Image (cartoon, rainbow, N blue to C red; front, side, top):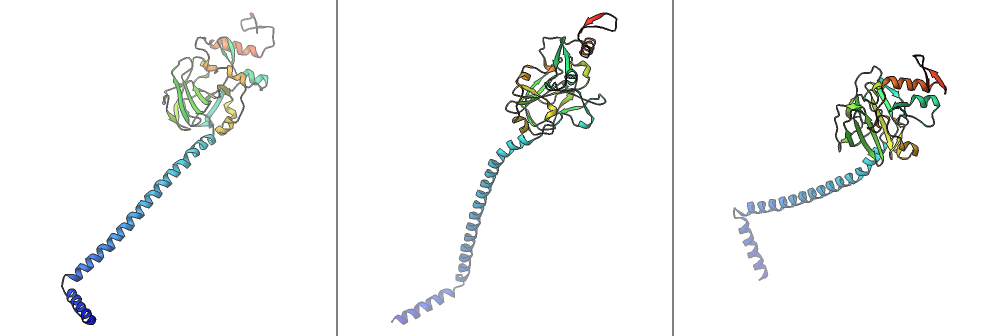
Length: 279
């Protein structure tokens, strides 16, 4: 009885397979199942890849953030000119430890008073115009038009550390701008305070308000200044070209006479006209 049932089932299945639509239907169903599996696998792979991509990108961002700060600390100060080979320092920074002759050369006569130079006066050897560039990357915190000082640009590089550019014209930046090292800030100009300087830029580096000698930090990283100690007395001295605007600078003739007097011994001396004066 069971064998008879098996034979009938077998004959029924064979008759079913002999129908023309059965085989194509089986192939179509099989292809659909295989295609569905492939699509599901690909979609799962894409999701994982996207997840890994986002994770990698986020990791890169988090990794790069502190690296940028480190790079800023390692960036070197540079002379604020494009072609430093053609540049000359007209007047040096006044150093308390320098010998008397160097200190005399670093004094500027202003308002009938000798004022220590708290920066470097830089010009071209031939006296030509030149572009003033950022010594270091940073944020512009001050842009001031001032005929007495020859205009002022100040850039902050780190907490308490700034560079200042005086005696400039055709200013190309404004407060709040982010600037890169070597970016053109303005053109070199002139100032009423330092008329004898001609076309030049007065460049300063300050830490916590204390002026430091820029020449000591050229080609050195910002970190070297961050870790240095500054002399407190210098904090009381403003820029030679950045003195109180209420004062009036002396003219060139008075300045020449005063500077000549620096090299004469104390006591009475005779000027060009034959009259005696006190040095």
